[in-house]
Length: 333
Image (cartoon, rainbow, N blue to C red):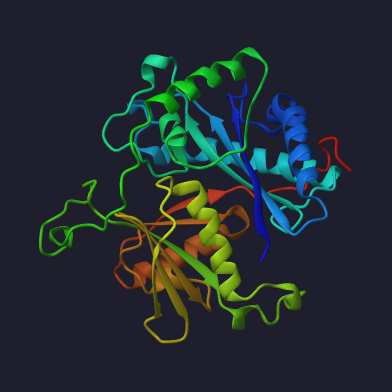
């Protein structure tokens, strides 16, 4: 396994729009410079450099954007445009991604404050990503060797706000499990209660289902794929600094597949479940409420809801994400 090298944070202001063309005009050159600099520092080694990128978008947590499901389409389109740009730059400059001698890039959305008066701590200062506040990033305890920001007016506005948040950060709170009286069934917990545990279920394709895939010999094992996914999700969703996650291993109801439960925060759990058919966990877990899939598999969402309806279960809210492109046709070869 590759060891971790230097880490950096890149604070980016909002682009004029979320289209790939505008994102490219706004961020291509500075992003190329940062990726090249970090890539050069680990090129030819067995190390990976970490780059956290915070994309500022004002008013993400405002009342006008509630429920947050309604801002999913533009944000996911922005994220797809940004990752497409990252992939194109990496290809053009021969920069490895997610492998030894390359970069591990994590992108979160920053709910940008409008002034230093907005940088304050109210309630719990540890928020769950991938939409976070400036104070959450500044108080996360993550160790960055370098912090980058743009030299234009919009970019420079983030710099003093970040340092103001850093000076205001409180002592790191100790991670604690939910007290016993919060267990559902003993103390009633409403569906909107902040103390209600949230579970993010991630279906990870079982090894048996991949044997007939093209280039199956190049695919990682279930264990490796689950661990890589867990590391990425923790990087964009958990800012507590807790590295000693509680891990519970079990089996699926039919005994065929593996299940790994990670207690990330007191009220947030990741559930990685091995699956062998189209529906996966959505056919065995009635409590799942939403399904995220790519546009190329949107037919699968309709099938899943059809199967759930046959059981008399509630159908799922379906969220589609864009398929990333290589960047060809946008100035890259």
